[in-house]
Image (cartoon, rainbow, N blue to C red):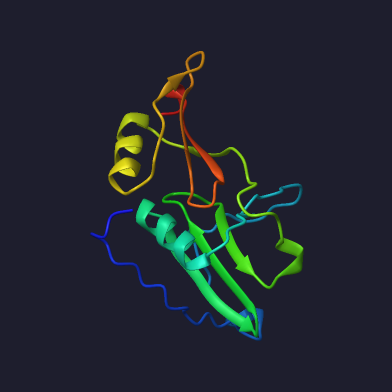
Length: 158
């Protein structure tokens, strides 16, 4: 990690309105139509939430939520740029407990894998070389806890 970008690790307060009618409409959010199953949150098991949050924020993930809704409970939600799916780092939530570092192979789809790889390396990630696996390109890295990620580029999607 580089020290060039300070990361605010203080928990923020996220207030959830008591009445759903008080939640403002967000035209950027896709509607959930019948038959749809939108993947929007993936738990990532980490040992140290502050260290993990700093890592992901340095990579460019947006810190959406950092709350402590009860004693011993913390929820941190971060979203990669342009993604509709976020990750959650948590403690004190038994339903999200997993052994640290066991998440494997999350893919971040990018339009320019060389540029994305260079950006992540510059921001402190140890990203492997770009590999061409039959016209689809990959570059692997891990977070500080050993959860693995892959940058993926499919040329026909750009």
